[in-house]
Length: 143
Image 1 (cartoon, rainbow, N blue to C red):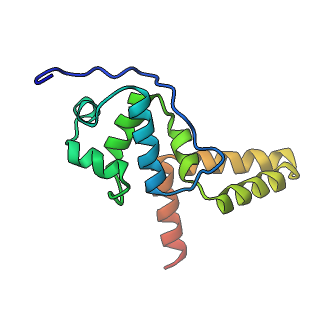
Image 2: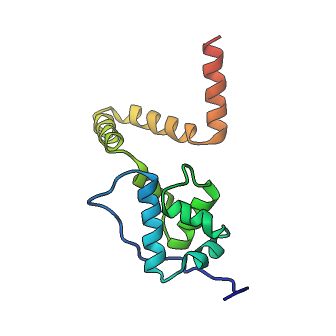
Image 3: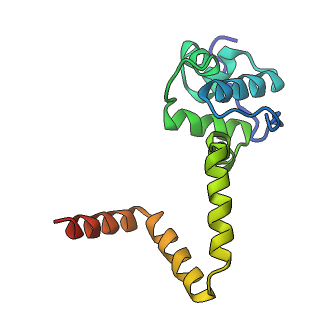
């Protein structure tokens, strides 16, 4: 196995922890571990496949890394076919989900022209350029 480069499949079926899903890094680590086991990969094989050390990957699986590198999370997501939306939802709290649902419900009651304005603002603020412009605007307001 020494020197062998692993090619991970783009999509591996993984179990989602829907019923008992808690939003913690331990659960993320458990998700990674279960996906690795489901793919019949050793810790070392997966670590080599995504370009990290075996101890680092073990710490992720054990929930001991407080903030896994964004690049590593992306590589794991690609390796197991997880979308970023799926990962975001994994860490979203129940309170956030309830508030998001309430916001959506309230927005649906608005006239169409206001809905379009809100969507345009959200799209604008999701871009880096939009964030920079909005930050400058707020800073000017607060002078």
